[in-house]
Image 1 (spheres, rainbow, N blue to C red):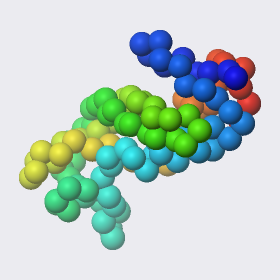
Image 2: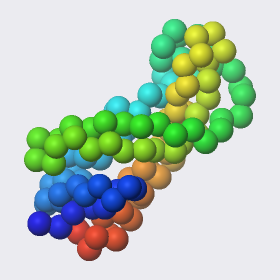
Image 3: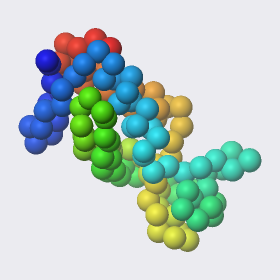
Image 4: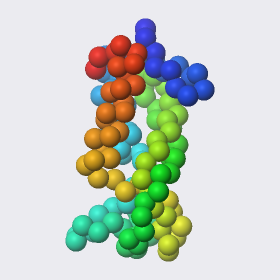
Length: 116
């Protein structure tokens, strides 16, 4: 069975529905700001409105446990902000970031000649 090599040499077994099972976790498990009724980002920890500070790249480590592949530790570096009220760092998740995450996963799988 083919595998996807991660940083540090860890191998993840790939199977036909791997991408479909793995991809949703990359968005759902990523700590991210929530949108208020007016579309402004609010902290997912304390609900305070986040400042208009410029986001900076931040690394988030996600532990994703898939039934067929077991636990996979994944690092995502995405634009993020820190809440001034509670100090929680979180991604500013939007359609573009969601698309970028999908493209990164597809590129990684293409590098292994795996087709979802």
